[in-house]
Length: 443
Length: 130
Image 1 (cartoon, chains in turn orange, purple):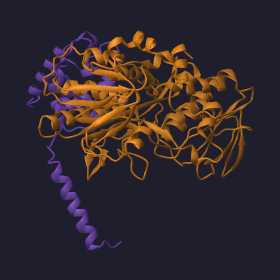
Image 2 (cartoon, chains in turn green, orange):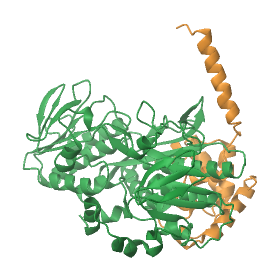
Image 3 (spheres, each protein chain N blue to C red):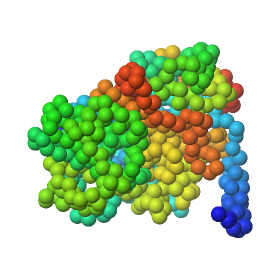
Image 4 (spheres, chains in turn cyan, brown):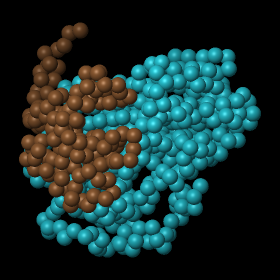
């Protein structure tokens, strides 16, 4: 773990460190727009963004594209952001955490966005203000929230936040969790067992657990060939399951006696009911499984900030207007990314980026009393089933019959063919995509 | 299954309300759709050093020929056949017009002001007022 990641996880990030990384203006409590090069019109509306991750950062940048004279402020808790995307690579050593770490420097300087490193703790929707942990009260004309996800540890008997931070790691928020999983994977003894237990739908990065299972199998194949991955799934289907299972057959002997991966479906009793941290075991409908490492990825709901701000409904997720991503529960508040109910769109970084662009145009048009334009969204998810074997799912989306649905005949997963070029090219494109995507978000 | 008249009425009224709130235009702007291509092709199509080709400055005909061939399945594809099937001819043309006006240089070397002008020129070429 980098020294920085360590200080993050310990909550020890002092003023000096912040100044070193972000410059004095980002830390000063006063002079909110002191750092700005732009002389905004006094009447320029103020758009405040809570969360500087994929949704928030993309939104701020594209709002600047859509309106050169709006004041934009991002309030983000951490001075650096580690992308969840490609964090599976870190577990098996294809990437380092540092390579997945980004900040808001370019967004601040190139797009004249004010960045406040502080934690938003509440909002007054009548007065249109946000309150931060350091006691700042910041007024907004439009508020945008991109709060990510939260875990439902209570869905598993014996599980807790504490256990998830000490032994049964999820690795579904990149950072110390990712490195802890790497350490556990490298410590699996010869012929040992790793369990991956994916969550129920809906959840962040639907292919994530299955890409991870593939990577564990690939790692074992190279370094510990008698070890095995067992996927204990509450579901009978998962995204790209056709191409994934074909890849497992081709690469890891799936469904043979020597398979490196075993997948237990929901119908076969794969759902985890309880966790025993002491014995490193889980109980499922199909019986008790003991392992050398257990990667339980819990069921999920919208991030804590969304809950605190009252933006979630009974489902635990945030209902939104499908055309603009304005909250259905609070006027002038917009919600982006994994925490939203976006129908057919998966909870992916690409989706959050796509929604942020549509939302930025809608916010700009609304502020200037222009008519809204039609909303078109996109998602492409590349996953690796091995270092040199990619699988993808893609679709363009529109709002139809009140729901976000695939547009035209665009929705589809990688075809299963005998052409060796297909998965190899998909792996090339996956790596290309990762480099471009983070540029689109952060620079 | 029998639907109660009340349910039908509620559905009809809420559908009307939804339609009314968003008097939806027929088509998204070329710019809004083009922005969606950035995660692979670079910001405004301005990535010149990757496997996925740059779209900035691409002649309109080249863009249209490629996308129509992907959509009709006459050009070998990895994922672009799927993406192309999401767009109508008019939508593809609006994107083509917009991309043709973006500068042929890497995003990192493009200033915000320069890009805002190019984006405006793209919107005008696509027949959209800015």
